[in-house]
Image (tube, rainbow, N blue to C red; front, side, top):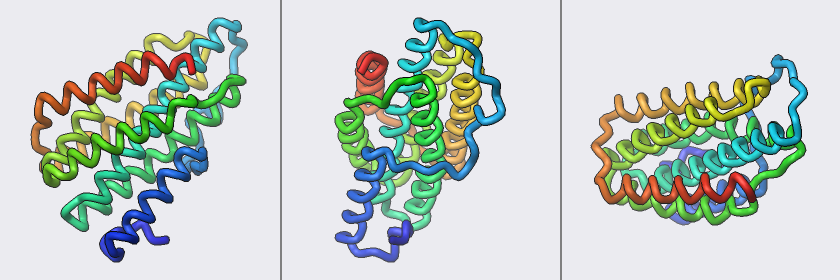
Length: 215
């Protein structure tokens, strides 16, 4: 089914949105770019280092699940056809991150978080609220999201084991991509995100990082 929502009825948009959610939660993600870790040597990690890397990458994976939920809801409820397509494009680009982190978790002999569906639902709700406030506020929500994600990824770069070059390569490319998405949203005319929404975003982020590191 085409991703261009403006050719669809509201029911078609709902079906597209539901299909997207099911594919994300089922782990059906395909990368359009090769993983940044493809040509990086895999170093020997201690059990403690491997477990720590897996915890951080699992957090990053859930963060990308939430990003898909945000873009999915914002695309569905955007008022501008052009903005819908922008959100769809960003979602496709961020699908690379889903695939990369899922692959890295397998390499670390670990798994994705069982809590991913809960955080998808929460992020979808926040994205819907932002979209209902209007396109400028929806873009502002993207800017604030990407700022928080950038800080979050930078902290992971500081915390990842020094020898885990593969995970570092993935996280660093994700950071670069998030900065680009935030700048693109800003350039499109983003409005400042209201303080209560920022607080809600920060609370959800703190809850997510504090739980999905472990499960």
